[in-house]
Amino acid sequence: MKKILDCIAEEMRAAFAACGYDASYGKVTLSNRPDLCEYQCNGAMAAAKAYHKKPIDIAADVVNYLKGKGACQTDAAVCAEDGPAECEAMFSDISAVMPGFINLKLSGEYLAGYLNRMKAADKLGAENVGQNKTVIVDYGGANVAKPLHVGHLRTAIIGECIKRLGNFLGYHMIGDVHLGDWGLQMGLIIEELRDRQPNLPYFDENYKGEYPKEAPFTISELEEIYPAASARSKEDEAFRARAQEATFKLQNGYEPFRAIWRHIMNVSLADLKKNYGSLEVTFDLWKGESDAQPYIPWLIQDLQDKGLAYESEGALVVDIAQEGDPKELPPCIIRKSDGAALYATSDLGTIIEREKDYQPTQYIYITDKRQELHFIQVFRVAKKAGYVKPETKMIHMMCGTMNGKDGKPFKTREGGVMRLEKLVKEIDDAVYDRIMENRTMDQAEAEETSRIIGLAALKYGDLSNQVSKDYVFDIDRFTSFEGNTGPYVLYTIVRIKSILAKYEEGRKAGEGADGAVSAPGGAYGKMVPEQSGGSGTGITPASVGILPADSAEAKNLMLKLSAYNEVVETAFAETAPHKICQFIYELSDAFGSFYNTTMILKEEDETKKAGYIQLITLTREVLETCIHLLGFEAPERM
Ligand code: ARG
Image 1 (cartoon, rainbow, N blue to C red):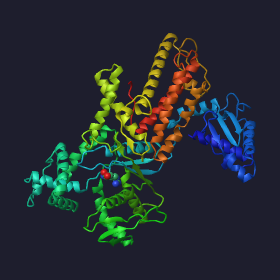
Image 2 (cartoon, rainbow, N blue to C red; image 1 turned 45 degrees about the vertical axis):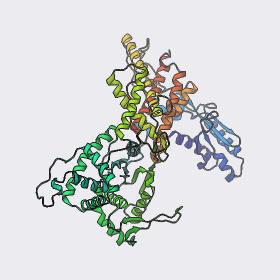
Image 3 (cartoon, rainbow, N blue to C red; image 1 turned 135 degrees about the vertical axis):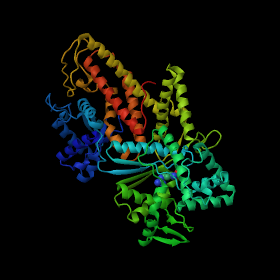
Image 4 (cartoon, rainbow, N blue to C red; image 1 turned 180 degrees about the vertical axis):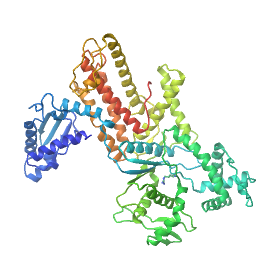
């Protein structure tokens, strides 16, 4: 469905053209003076220079033209009573004001018509802008055998949202967890294991039999082994050297270590899936750095053959500096002097694999912002070497840090790294306490509800911030039912659900009384009740449709709703989930004002009441669609 701003701009462009000015001046924006108008067009100001006229004269030309044409209902009614919705006069007010602004207000009929079309449209009018486009989203980044911690929280939450958004807009989104499964942590675990259980067959060089199917450790043992080994390697140089050697052997295919590696992978993956699952974050691919390894020898050779990679101090590097760089960027190291491949090499190998398997039109990587240089280097090498087409978009979404209230990266009270499970539990508990404060709910429902609201609090708390900004993780604020929070939006949805349920109950009771049947959903404004009388009049929200606003609050709610498809598209195009949060926060506020000033269920005029119900049903649908895109759902009650 065409965006409302585009509909208005189209009208304005045609008007400029009809008055003899270039159509391009007919640009329209949301008004920055909502007290004066809803939309504004500043084209007359720009046109003044080109046409050597006063801006106000141009504005007046355009306004007079629109009025004469009947685009403004205050001056003319162009549409026949039964004409199609599209021919409603678009504006209820157009004026040219000094020095040359054109102020616009949408007519109630036009706006209601737009919302009714939106209500009937697939996906509420969001278009399939992504058709035939494949996007790889790389947003897990967890490191195998290391517990998932809050550092991985942002990328998971943001990535899940970007993936859902893209899929919703018709893109073929492929989410890859891209595990860190190939680094030194593997060698550390292997050597620590050797010291603890020297009799395992993996450490017997003469062992010829099959290796055990069962891993020699559980996930909790593994989670203890890695930090122990990591701490040890910082003090014990010989141990560190052994771990490096083991990593090297593993990476070169030494079978006993590959067998241990497979155990580590199996045990960790089960745990990672559980953890991501509790965040309702899923991936299409569970690949990792190890999957890139088969491509690396070819890659290194190819970069040399193309004359891009050269030796520098024993290492193999590719220059990536470009004219116009604000500062000098160091070359990308492809191979260290000791022969080891690096993080960048593995990302380039992964790109070669992804191009072979998926030919994506776009890549989106989501990581901590400290990886900025890494991705500049990887993207430039990939393009320079022609692994990725020049037109393929490569985006690095750089996440700011989640800080504690002290402004430093978030830690546990003891100063350690907070485990994700623990964090999720703390939020759920906080919500549970809030729910129980002044409500009665049985324990099982309260716990399930806390889980749902807790997830919303956590995800919204994160997504409502601009991705690149640091933010303070504040459980009290995130779980509050008021303000710009997830629970506030959920509360709005729950409130609408409850009104709708009451309306349904009332209608059923009414129908029972006189047996009236609901009229099938008809066109907006053509409300002709099949039967009337009592409250079972046959008047249904669907047959009445959304009616022109009868209050400033209703108009404001309707204007907010009409921005939905624009917001969803922009949030994806600009990889900016916070725009959806801002939108649903404002929408929830707009609903709140409408609700406070409108007697919805007590309205005596059944037609009017049905119109309100249709309006809040659309509000609910928009809110529910948006929170689903953000990655959470609403409970039945709260
Ligand atoms: N494992 C990495 C880390 O924890 C993140 C991986 C991000 N994805 C990528 N393709 N480099 O820092």
